[in-house]
Image 1: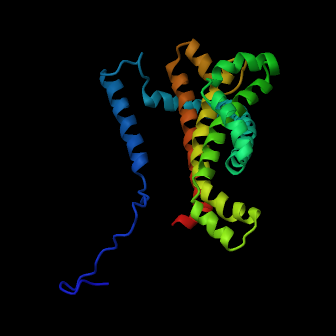
Image 2: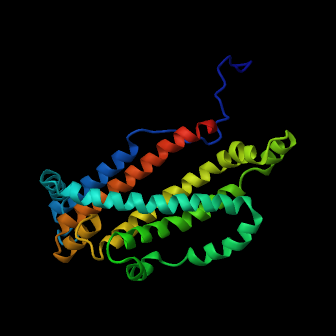
Image 3: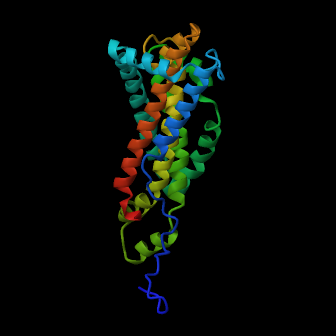
Length: 266
């Protein structure tokens, strides 16, 4: 399409604020921040008692990798995170869908979820230790509960926000209840469910560290606790870096799932 006076193409203006992928900008931000800290610690503007040099943290990280201690701690933490989150997220999505679809279940369980949701889950760790012991059971239970409640809230909120016009349209075409749920409700709720999943897994990582600081000898949380007790900032920040990389990886994986499941939005 061209303007009749200028004969120049008219730019498309219907993008709808669709986000554009811009590569390497996020990486550049990380690089600049790390370079500033490195320069500040070497120049003496930042005390080594406050922040260690990023180069020293990198050397500690490389040492962890070469000795095999990195995988020893990371494999234990990943197994706990995957097991606890799988229980909490699957139960949360299932219950959230039921709450969003059935009024009786919503009336009975929404007040209960609202009562549990604001409780600091870390405060329940001693109780879980009494119930499940100091081994893996209490850690799984803490992560499961921590990921369960935000997943329930995000899921039933997403189901309730599905456009009712689309549901009425499906009913007018004679679609069965199950077909409406499968073809309209679940696809429409999926963006909200995946957004809630990002928050739930981030909370799961936080609770993982808290759980591993009690009665654990292996795991990223236990490694950070040991480094902090010795005031070994290089090891401490190496552990924090592992958690940061874990969080970025989880976010990236969810982003890939979104691209695959939500390609209909493009």
